[in-house]
Length: 259
Image (cartoon, rainbow, N blue to C red; front, side, top):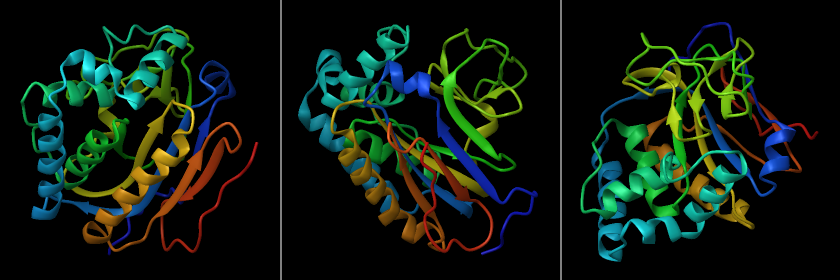
């Protein structure tokens, strides 16, 4: 597979201590893929998403039932802990689960986005695909209010996160999400074509590491059919708060740093 060449060989991902102070059970699982050709979803991925939707339809949950799912309920508490109203700003997992629980189907975007949505519905956890072309660092941290966020699909209308709002940010003062995982930014959207990708799975409940690991395994199984298999995984939490991930060339083994 052709590798991207933008001068960036590694991506450092980190959780700020202030986030873990507010939400001690926060776990962030990641898969870094140095290069993948994002294409429309193949039948296998489409089947995974349809099966996840069908399972949620069969569960017969209403809005309150979705909010009570353990993974989502914990995220509602996590949002409250960082000053966000989850009724107004539901986390990404709750947003798509609510839509499907009403009997709807999710829009089909592409292989990677559809895969993440399928795993998110099954795990009741936020799962996302981020194009990290050219990025050398990402940190989950409280915003200071000076960051620039470009809304998905509307990069001509920049916003500034509120001070204290948890965001994914880089060293250049750009925020790539709003209200933690409520909305993704335009710069890291996964569209068709060749990209470096970072897939993320997040939990906020006690014992969530096992659920994150399980969701990562489901992603990895599907990735075997979507890429050349070159990838690196890491799981970050209150013990291991950062990892340095290879985003160019072959990956020999996982690497991380404890802080």
